[in-house]
Length: 136
Image (cartoon, rainbow, N blue to C red; front, side):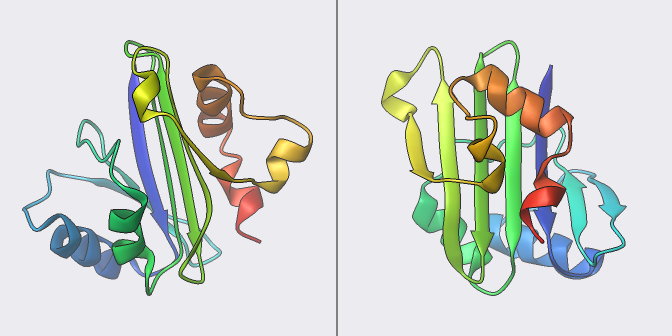
């Protein structure tokens, strides 16, 4: 199982345009979910944005708040990235097979009660949609 979602605080057409310009390539069909709080989630399916440098993410998050989350049960890996007001609040990468790709910057409120110590913790966070509690 592989999940990759990018949530952004903007209109759906702006989100897809900014991501397309950022990756500088056409995007595959994306499932788009609009939320009542003016956020939109792009389900990236199999499109891989994992292991990008934090600075690359900051280029996308310079003018829009974003929340990227992904996990792969076959690779035993997970990633969460939060950029709010142009600032990285959290970027964690846990990859059981590639320790050289580990990254651990910042902390979310959620982690006060449930620390992210393994890729399965990221999986749980993603599946339970906890990202919405972090953007208030």
